[in-house]
Length: 625
Image 1 (cartoon, rainbow, N blue to C red):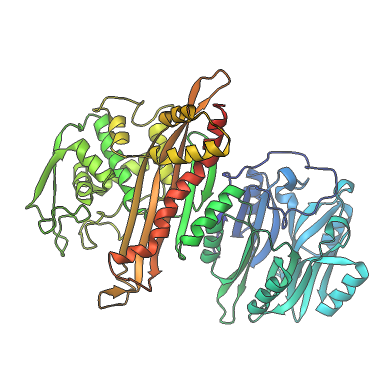
Image 2 (cartoon, rainbow, N blue to C red):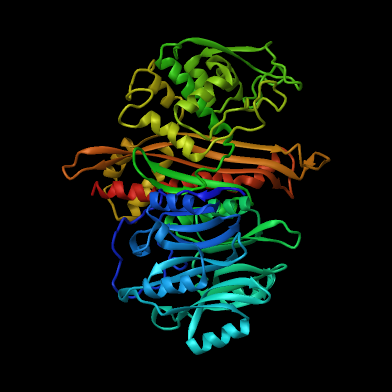
């Protein structure tokens, strides 16, 4: 049985660390309804001890639990803070391996109620229950009841007599279900409803017709599901069915949404699949950025990331997704050379050679290799180390990159730098732009994450103990060479500063100009557009499947003023990427015209850089008023 975690606690989110309930008034259960940001976890097929250990270590509690067999459970959890605070946490927030009688006794005598239940057969053949629990004291009391082993008609009869809403529905076999009902009064008079034996197409139709969203979805037959719905389709939310665990994880990572329900089941062919429901708890700004990227992504994976240096994460969607950033990866080669300069192994003023392709000596994208992957050395170019690094980082010269990779010691040296910077998911494995047949390539793509690239930039510009030393105006200095070989990232933001100043009503544009002059930043973009040789069908120069990568990463420093008018700098690392290996092309599917199909990605990666920093720019400008 697999042991897998979809996510660890989302520490990047703005979590309120309250230890008391947000209000003494009766509150609608937030577990499946609130889009307030909170730390959360999703654990798959783990034993109770592992779930309890994780929950205890993260001050979290179980809100949804499923039995996976063999003594293993899957659980969705939230951090016990803010409006999510309950008096039950960790192992007190759920039960397992308990009889129905014992469960009812616990609920009645310990002032608890169940928000999710599941029935299963234990190893000895006895019927047992697992349930997610919350406290049910007078200050937030909800009348609730559980029904077990009933047909849909019997549940409806009980529901009518009790005047309750079904909030959880669990199929037990033989056309019978267990349900959790909550009294249809006060905040719980939500107008929700439930259905059994519905196909995916029928579920989609219900959602669209009634403008509702799912709060529970469990398999109850061959291709059918029991669902519970509630009004609120205007909330951001997603659901999936018939998905693999990996696809379920990818949906969460791509949306950044909080899982409120995940269930495994066997499809008609006996293959394990998943249903899952997610609520969007991203901030308004983060959701807007995510949705803008999604509109131009053409189905490929994307992500964005903004973090204050030596501070918290501000935005993070797919920040841990391994992707190939194209030429953005070259910053790791530059950092490796900078460390050599710092240690005295090289100087930026030294001369070095790299090679041009004899058939295309002016083409910066084409390395000097033949079709078999043999290096061509008939056309050398001599340059200083600094100018070579600058050629790699600004016009993104692949030939200069190839020469520097050899100079620093090859892939092993570059990956040693990644290890030193704790870039744990990074592998530099490809001679960029040199073809797929290069003998020493370690793979067919480089592997990075936005978080890892953030670690690289943060390690070089942090205030205390930067790996390349303090800022310097000396061209021979390692940090000077590393920073000044890159494109100016602050210049790209200047128009954004003026836009925000105008919105804020700042009319002293001399002050704004002074503000802009004090910004600093560096940036590296990356892109790749090439035919996928493994999947493409080509004819008359046109191919239908393409590899498309777009990325941009770097750092920026914004000037703030304290109460005395003294300027201090806040620094941020940032990144954005698109990464697809099988992108469909319909028109102009030949190089270079095919790139016109992806101009939306090109423009959006720049726009997202600006949009991520708008709130920080506004905060900085406010300090100048």
